[in-house]
Structure formats: C-alpha cells, structure tokens
Length: 414
Ligand code: GLA
Image 1 (cartoon, helix red, strand yellow):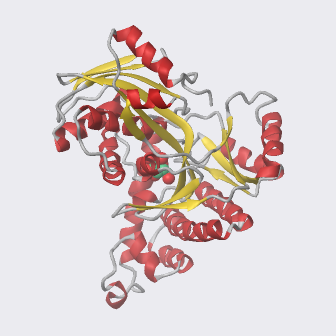
Image 2: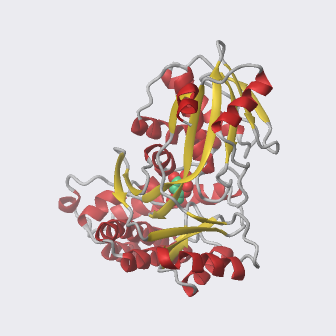
Image 3: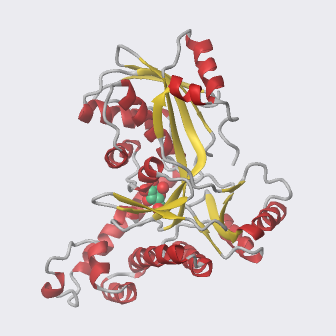
C-alpha cells in the first residue's frame, strides 16, 4: 500500500505552492480516508454502518481565483496537473482519472450552491488508491471543502456529506453515503455509527486496548475502474431482491402498514433469519444470497455496536468473521488474496478479520488486542509479504474528520 506521496509538513507544502505559482496559498484542507469496521454494501440499502476515519489523508493548499478556472497539481508526479472550468455541467476526463473527483465536487458547487470561483491548488495524499480505504471520497470531500472555502459557502459536515455522496456518482459508480460521511464526521478514538436518510452520525468510543490492523492484499480494486461494474451490479441486485420479497404473502398489508418499503423497514418488523427464509421463496440462488447478506449484515452492525459499547472484543471479532463469510459466499465480493489474509490473520491472533470497503481486492481489517498487535503484524509481514510488507500494513488510528482552515492559522499553530 505504497502511499501516493511522502508526507510533507504543511509549511513545506505551502512553500512548494509558492515555488510553483509565485503566489501564497490561503487555505489548508485535510480529508481522511476511512476503514469500515463492519456494515459492508449496506449503506446504499439504507442500513447503518460502522466505519472510522483514519490517519491517512488527502491534504490541499489552495488559493481562490477571481475566475472559474480550477487548477490542481498533485505533488505525486504520476498524477500530474488537471485543469478545467467550474460550471454546472462539466464533461468528465477519461474514466478512472483522478481529476473526475474534483469535477464531481465542482459540478455540485456550481449547480446547487452558486459557486463561481475556482482555485489553484496543490494536492498531496497518503491514502493508498484503489485499496478500499476511500482515497477517492477523501479527494471529493477535500475538493468540496476547497470550493466551499473559495466561495465563502457553508460547510456543515452532514449536509456536505449527503451532497458530496450524490455528487460523486459523477464518476459512474452508484455508491452509497458511508465514505463521505465518515470522512467529514470522523472523531479521534471513535468509530462512527452512520445512519442514512436522514443522515445521522453517532460517534462510539473505541476501547483503548483494541487495535485494528489494515493489510493490503496487493490487488487493486478501483471504484471508478474495474470494480465499478461489479459494484453497480450488486446494487441493482439488492433493489431487485427487495422488490421481490416485498410481495411475499407473509408480508401482509397489516404488517406493511406504515412500514417504509426498504430493507430497514423490513428489519424493523422481521428478524434477519426469517427474512432470508422468506427470500428463498421469492428469489433464485444468487439474488436470495445477496438479500441474505444485506439483512444479516444489517443485523450484525447493531450487534457490533452493542459489543463495542460493552467492550466485548470476542463478540465484535466474531461478527467481523461472519461479515467476511457473508461477503465472500453470499455477496461474492471477496478475492482469494483477501481470503488468504483473513485466514492468516486468524492463525496469528486476530479475534476477527474481514475485507473492508467494496472488496473485489483492496484491504482487510483485523481486530486484535493491543498486546498481540505487533505479533500479528510481524506474522503477516513474514507469511503474506515474504518479509517485506513495506507500507502494506497499517495499524489504524481513528481520526478527526475533514476540515478547512485559513492556512495562516494552521501555520501559526505548527
Ligand atoms: C464503497 C462505496 C460505499 C460502500 C462501500 C461498501 O466504499 O463508496 O458507499 O457501499 O463501498 O460497503
């Protein structure tokens, strides 16, 4: 998981901006990635999830312009510079281009919030791309905050998270709202229970002796590239499965009275196991299994939140394991490399392990007690990475949400 760029201090980033443009940057933005602890592929089914923002982040220094031009240079030369005009309808760069996340935010701010001013910006980041840690949403959020600051617009985190989740569909992936909400609402040392429609975030303290180890499988899963079709297909399957179950005779009009016709509505009335059984009457193999993943994962998130509050690491770990099995068997979103990492993590002391993010590649997250974390890290380094994990292993530190501030303020504090 080589970071996209070596970390630079904010002062060094500001100096680099000056060296390249001859101007002084005026704002500093940071937007973290996230690790999802449990609740996978259910945000777009309106069920709650439980991620945490992490210490890896996108950082931007910028200077607003008087015109609508947007110019973003990535410190990492492999990504280069992207330029475009801020407007309510912007033609995308080619599929998979990182600049499309900036365009997604730009279009939203021009179309819905009256933004007219672009900016010159220098971007740096250390969230590995296509790893399931939300590097792309962090970039969308960072750009959103940059447009808000450049145009003097409001930036309420929940409102922005909702809007930017919609905006990011510009790249062609029909994503849910977890990533933007986690990025904007992160809190140090807390997991986040996120509910959708309406968006609501409840920070839940993480016990001080729990550690979440993130390990990259080495398989890229690019949300705006190869993984996009698989993701969109799963989402469509969930909608189809729901529609079929809603007409089952067991769901009588009395039972459905006042019930929203959603997965959440169903789970509020009927247990996950019973629902999965009903689905078998209405659906063929694959769709019935997709449905079973969604309802069982929804139920697991609620149990995981309780285990977290009770500090019950064994139960939380078991729920992570069950989540992985369900994602692998019922949702078919895993990959042999992820399954292997999960198995190895168990062998070396993890109390639970699962793929994190959309899957199809990317990372796993493993839960371990603090005293066993180094042993687990070393064992994975030896057995999975042949003694040289480089940056592929990371112990997550639950971190604060995205922010934008006047650069002078940040530099004065440093
Ligand atoms: C991606 C999407 C999220 C969510 C996860 C899977 O990260 O952006 O909205 O659906 O996949 O849980």
